[in-house]
Image (tube, rainbow over all chains, first blue to last red; front, side):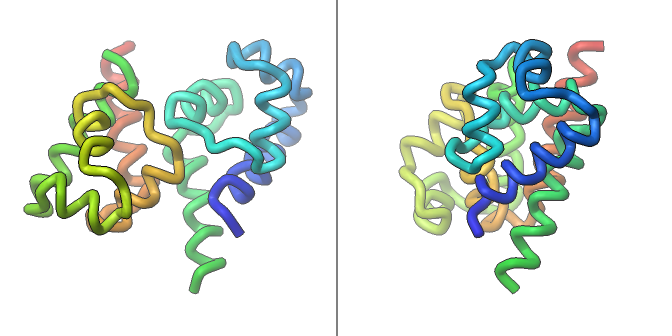
Length: 78
Length: 78
C-alpha cells in the first residue's frame, strides 16, 4: 500500500474524529475541498506544507501524523 | 522562515552528519542530485513520499525529521 493511500486514510480518520466536513477543513486550512477529497483517496501526494496546514486544524502535530503513517508503512512492508 | 527553508537546512545538517554527498544521497534515495540541492536551499517543497525516501537513507525516521522541522517552525512563529 502506498504512502499516499495510507496518508489519505489517516487524514479521513482524523478529520472525522474532529467532526469536520471536507468543506470545513478545506476552508480552515485554506485549501480546496476537491484537493482534500483527492488527498483522502490517495490521489495526490501531500507536501510537507500541506501536512502542516491540515494538522494545524486537526488537533494533531505534523510529526504525530507522519508517525502514524510511518507506523503503517513499516508494518505493511515488514 | 518558511517550512521549506527549515526543512532544507535540516536535510543538509542530517546529510552531513551521515557523511553523504548530495550525489550519494540522491543515488541511494533514487532522486536527482539537482533536486536534493534545490530541497536543501528551500527552493522545492518536499512531498511526504520524498521525505520517506530521504530519511530511509539518513538513519532517522520520517516522523523525527518532521518533528525537528516542526519544533523550529513553532519556535519561529511564537
